[in-house]
Image (tube, rainbow, N blue to C red):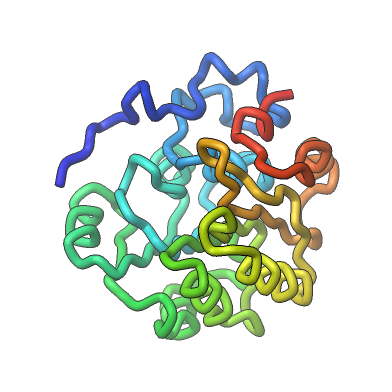
Length: 231
């Protein structure tokens, strides 16, 4: 398994030349050379928390440590701490040769998150939750497994794979998170025209003026990252 130090040109979703087009120029955005996640989930998380430094994330479904990873930018340039989970042991081993914040080889649908969060003294308001494992019904099980009675998340990105697996998982996810008081900001984020993910915030802590900048595009189907982030 190999990976380049930087995202290859054919994969780049955001580069420094796009900064003037961002809907929200959060503190520190002017220094970002490129993003790493597939549809700019990393840029969304940083936008919603206004470029927060020293934040905390939980990444369920890590895959690679840099390319197509939702948390590498947060760790490497904004000094976030956090934990990632991945079921593939080979991927975990490789991930942990690259990243300071280590990945755990665990079944995310069975893991006891409450114990780990307590051991690490995570705050009751965790800044970012990324939930992306396959298939989509397992992603939903992992979401429901989290200790919601003790922790909240300021930003959540959830992979529905609606283009492939149908609407049931998406509907259950919406009912579940809305029931907990979360707000859906962007629905049906698309990759190559295929809608596959929903993006959420906790309205109790995220600035509504920032959210408003994204809401104007957030209810249309098949939103591309370019449309979401460019004003």
